[in-house]
Length: 425
Image 1 (tube, rainbow, N blue to C red):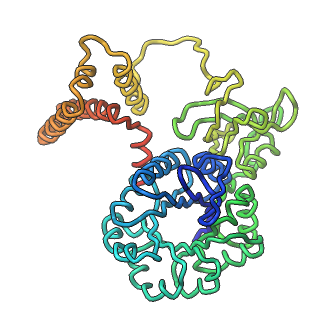
Image 2 (cartoon, rainbow, N blue to C red):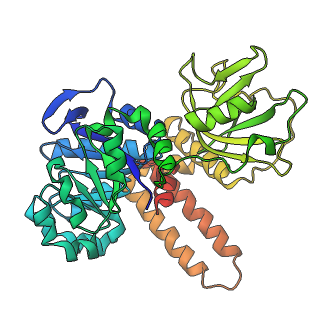
Image 3 (tube, rainbow, N blue to C red):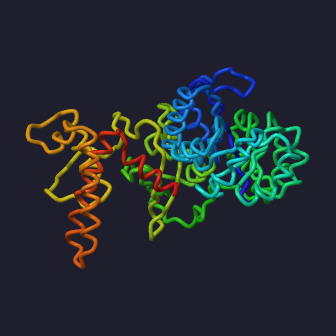
């Protein structure tokens, strides 16, 4: 079992506060705080919704959805759960897991229902009293995936329940963290102890690995000696946005910058003009956080997939590659780009209507007309699928996708939100 480092966000009135009993706000927004934890190499983030009332709860769900769409760490949604619908909303917002608070009887009562509906791997249990959990252990093991202990005074009882358990701690020394993570059923450390020390997560993971504790950390499969260097002893690095695959820039590694990049999680290059190491973003704040490093067949070039903060180019452009040299007319074949391009045209018609445009006709007729066309096209797609030849089916699928994108635009849903949801599945 991989041991996890899990900071948390206490969400209160649209702000991140210090804790359940400390409503002091952080300077950062909840999203900025989540991105910081993600960039610090957190394995997951627990978001506790402390809102009051339905309106405030819906606002919290919007914040959680925004966080889920912008960070790579797994998000656990907790708080304000009264019925199955609340679990559904958390999972639909993009949470990897939704948490039931077993201090509340209504949460205990819906365990079976939500587990069968969404799968036990989507359900975690928050608790404060080990004795109460022990009496329900059989059902919890059957219908939930993980426990989260919120009461640090109960830590000594953790081994009594044979299930992966995240411990929420107010504070902890490194020795204590190592001792707790050494317990077979302790799956992670969370709480204020992690929030205050998120910048040390990479270092803590290294120490855990040195102590034979399994953690999720970046370890190179190749040594620097394995690469073929250029005449200056360097290897070129092609840098790519990990979400869109857009090429952002080209730079160089030397041995020190290669290992520094892996150790720090931030792209660190060798600047040939300055003849020194260069942490991308050190001056501008436009850091590049490593998602993956890949080398080519000859091991003489490295491809870096990164999360780009701000822009990659010193000119203010997102990518350094924008000066067109020459081109020929061609039909775009990249499925993602085709869908993106068509969707951009559809959205533009909403802002800049064109006379005679069928898309504008649909917008003018409104949601009911758009829904009617989506229904009609889905039916035609089903009928076409009964034919042996797939040409008609391809045509009808394209029609359906077009009308679906009009609906997406009308409801302000993006492709990224849909693909993120597919990726989570």
